[in-house]
Amino acid sequence: MNYKLIKIFFFLLLFSGCGFKLVKDNFNYQITDIISSGDKRINYILKNNLLKNSNKKNNKIIQLKINTKKEKTIKEKNISNQVTKYEIKIETLVEYTDLENIFNNKFTISKNGFYDVASRHSETLNNEKDLVKLLVKSLSDDIINNLKSDFND
Image (cartoon, rainbow, N blue to C red; front, top):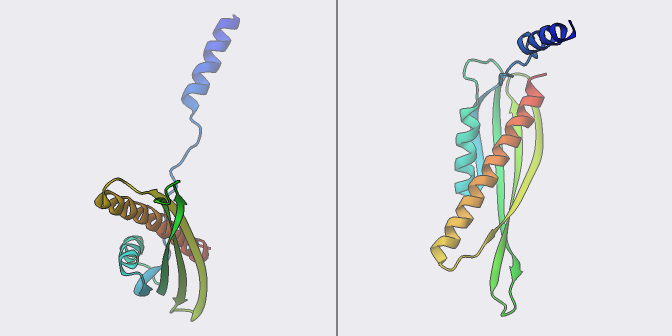
């Protein structure tokens, strides 16, 4: 008798579902113009990522001004005073204007990371480029999240 109750309970639990629903990203804004200054490569990647997430069918029209700064500093040196690690810090100031309601706001996001110096200079440059791409992807995600939180209310 107990075995049948446990079996029925298990099947009910298995087939009842947990109620999980996939959250759909709704962007309630349309980016019309992005004005950028600072590092050109970082701004190019940021523009592409932000415009990809803009909703062309929405009535909320915003304009972005992006100012980026990239700083490269020495993180570590070995005993013979050769550089073994670099640190890159990317700081982005984002100003946005809601053209519909004439509303201005700004926020700053900064990301940093480290990369190793390789035995070849070309490998070191590739390490730097890979780190910059990773940091810019993280920056664009944070900018999108900030814009979503302000415009999806």
